[in-house]
Length: 225
Ligand SMILES: [Zn+2]
Image (cartoon, rainbow, N blue to C red; front, side, top):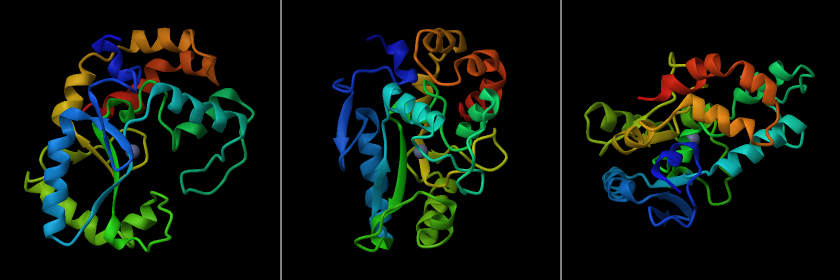
């Protein structure tokens, strides 16, 4: 598998570029930076903990197709379960409210992480990754993380899904090692993504292909930061 396919999540999970951390797979290049950030936060009383990291194309495709089929719940922008639209284009946009386009998820890069404060979680608590959690039990953690990022002391990690950027809902819990992700995203080509969709069994395929340029402007390129 060539380097050019990394940005679409089409890298072999057994790739030697990967390393397992806390049960998740991340790109080896970010490991030392992650450990440094973890160490810094632990000095402040927080326990940086992963809730998600690398996700291959197949996994994002499965989420996408199961949301389209109704096997997984569709949530509106407020996080409330919604009726499944009959129209393919409307269905596609409904899925996009909370799920990335397969082949264009930043979780494909191995440089992006969903994180929480393990010290703020009750032992039996199941993390949801919602704005309510970020403003509630994880608020002090996110405040400190923001301070570190603003002071350029976060070892290359930044938030990507922030208010006012693109059409993806803000996600405070999602952090990215930008210097590494930029390197992979240099190889992204929309024409290549189109080819991948053409030969993939993906739900809402014609809506995706018909709207791909627009989708890229709203859901992909704003997050190439
Ligand atoms: Zn994420």
